[in-house]
Length: 312
Ligand SMILES: NC(=O)c1ccc[n+]([C@@H]2O[C@H](COP(=O)([O-])OP(=O)(O)OC[C@H]3O[C@@H](n4cnc5c(N)ncnc54)[C@H](OP(=O)(O)O)[C@@H]3O)[C@@H](O)[C@H]2O)c1
Image 1 (tube, rainbow, N blue to C red):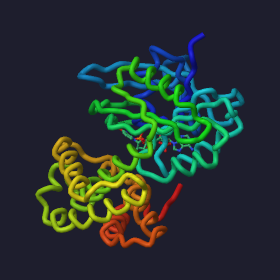
Image 2: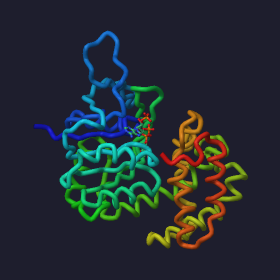
Image 3: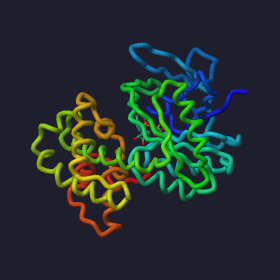
Image 4: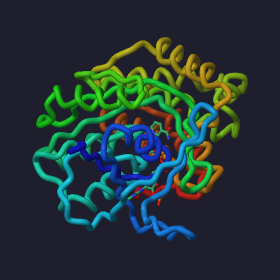
């Protein structure tokens, strides 16, 4: 029998993973509510299309709602960071100490909270630079290939299982590696997101364009000092100049991209700012460190989004 993977979070990343993995495993989507009935078909499975390298693939997936009873052996959690814990709690009754949970959230905070609350389970985190978006419901575009790292988060997560997850991701075509210290990857990605995403929102521009703006140029050095200080506190210390070099390299390397945060603001959706610069503000407060630039950027994004202060 094929291994079954449940995916909770039928969005851009969840849809991408579902389509790419389904030739190799039995994918089952967990939905908040049943999908709209498809006209002209008796097939009740969830339809998804994936635009990949100029080709459109069509898939159909078995789905269930959170209240189903079947135990879950492997779960990919692909909601936004602010929904992650609530979403996981909605299927808590289906998880056992034998369950493997792989968290795909960007930013920081939700992963550690889940690792604590689900400490008796095998909790892993992924950090990925794959890029997917969802121009309309049921249609996923794989916009850019990237690199994925997977590593254990909870004490009950054996490293060999991380390797199995990576083997599966590789089989599905994702360039992936295991890491014994996934927190290091999450912090590194967090520092880049802190230096790119809020600027794209405040300046309403593509990633590469932030580099030309005085608003970015006047703040980036001070921002990198704040980020570097927090990286040192977290145990992943790096000089501010390195942090800045990485931010500039990513902005240049993804120059034509519209960041996910700007896409969220333009679509009137809640952003993940609280898990990105907002997380740094909370972390800095907890360690008695100043964070004026992170505060300014967090407030700037909240001011431009309809969802400031929402947490779920
Ligand atoms: N997209 C990417 O390329 C990418 C790359 C790297 C990392 N990430 C990270 O991956 C995470 C997901 O990103 P995304 O772009 O896929 O977001 P997304 O398109 O907004 O998808 C999130 C999905 O989760 C669903 N959801 C939320 N709460 C739920 C619940 N309680 N039960 C069931 N479903 C629930 C949402 O449903 P509704 O639509 O009904 O709200 C939505 O379909 C984020 O943390 C993001 O930063 C994404």
